[in-house]
Length: 312
Ligand SMILES: C[S@@+](CC[C@H](N)C(=O)[O-])C[C@H]1O[C@@H](n2cnc3c(N)ncnc32)[C@H](O)[C@@H]1O
Image (cartoon, rainbow, N blue to C red; front, side):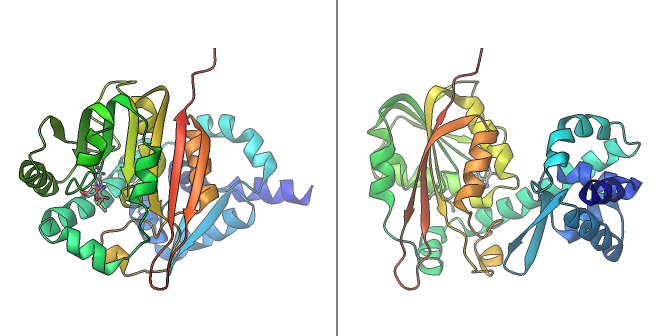
C-alpha cells in the first residue's frame, strides 16, 4: 500500500505529468528536459527524483551524463501505463511538448550530421586509431544470409559494401551524410564495384517500402542514433517477415570523449537494453555474441535478430 500511495502522490502534479509524458517517448538528459519543458534545472531535477523514487522513471548513467526514461520497477505503473499514456495525450501543453521533443531529437541528428560531413575524408583513420575494437567483421559477414535485397544503414565510407554485394542480388546503402556517401562512391569506383545503390537518407525514416529488404545490416551506427528504439522500429518496418537484422555495436564503455571526438550519442549498449528494444520493435529469435577486447580495445556486441511474423 505505501508503494501505491507514493506512486499516486508522485503522479499528482501537472509538471510531473508533462515530464512523464515526454519520458515515455524517449530518454533525455536534464539539460534536454529543461529545454523541452521550458523549466529550470533544479525544478526538473526535483521532479525527476520524486518520479524515479516512485519507480515511474529510471535513470541510465553514461559516464557523467544521466539519461532519464520510463522505469519498469513499479509493477502497478506498468499495468496502468497504456491507459495512462492515452490520458497524457490530453494534457493542455501536449502539442508544444511533443514539438519541443522532436526539436531535441533533431538537434542530436544535426550534431551528428555536421560531424560526419566535416570528418568524412579522415573518418577511416580517425575511427581506427581513436576507438580500437577486436576484429569482428568476419563474424559479422558470416551471419549475413543470401537474400534478394540487402540494406546497409549508416554505410559511412562503404567499407563493408563489396563483401555484402557478394551475398545479395541487390544492395542498397543509406547514410544521412552526403560527404560520407561521396567517400563510399569513391571507394566503390576505385574497386570497380558497380550495381550497389547509395541513397541519402535518415535511418529513422528509411527510403524503402514496408518489407522491402530481406536483411538489414547496421554496423557501428546505432550508437549514433538520436532515438535507437525508433531506428529499430524503422528497421523492423522495412524487413520482410523472417528477414534478419545483423547489428554490430559497442558494448557499454566509459570513453566519454567519444561524444565530442566521434559524435557518439551513446557510450555503447547493454545486452538486455538492446534485447528490450528489439522485442519492442517486433524483432525476435536473437543471438547475441559478445566479442572480447584486448587491452586498449572496447568489446563489441554482435546481434542477429529476425522480424517476427505479425500475429493474426
Ligand atoms: C561510425 S560510422 C559507421 C560506418 C560504417 N557502417 C562502418 O562501420 O564502416 C556511422 C555512419 O552512420 C551515419 N549516420 C549517423 N546517424 C545517421 C542517421 N540518423 N541516419 C543515417 N545515417 C546516419 C553517419 O553519417 C556515418 O556515416
